[in-house]
Image 1 (tube, rainbow, N blue to C red):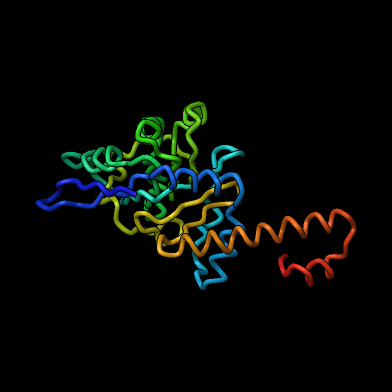
Image 2 (cartoon, rainbow, N blue to C red):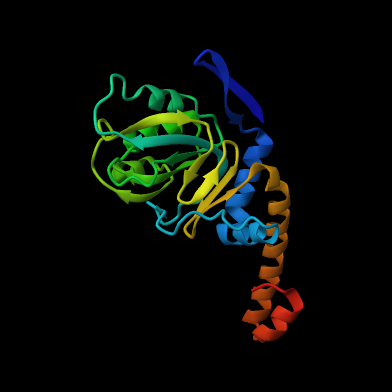
Length: 238
């Protein structure tokens, strides 16, 4: 993974990790062969019990499925229009690297709808694999037509101007009850969103692959009429 930096506030700020070809192959493997439930189980096994986002986070498309490195953005509610309300928002969006999932924290705001058609278009152009917005979104029909994959907690047709603005990006944020750090692995499917801390990605994927293998064998035997008790005793998964 390559690291890029941007000059900000007088110092060089790390802006993310561009996905390598190996990363992209891993994302595709996760999307095609794994799923959030088995990743959550694997995280539980190694003591990470709070990595699944809250149940109110839902996809705008039935077949939404993506994996990628976290690019975090922090919004906060505003009750006035600042002199340059979009400065950090534009900077954050332009900093997205290929292979990243945009993770937007709004402190669970129901006032501000920070994500819409234009941010989706910008994210696609930067190579983003999807977005997770712990807040409201708009322009949903257009986003669906764009094919951009996104999870959000609700929909409301309001602009962010005067209601909320970006205060920082590529910093640790809390999104739907989960602490997300830049570069963590974010995986989403219809069951929800799971965040795998970067430092345990290898061990979690290894455990998840092993469990999927056992689940596949269990499923085959159950379809052939085996009793659940016998199958569980044999494979130890449920």
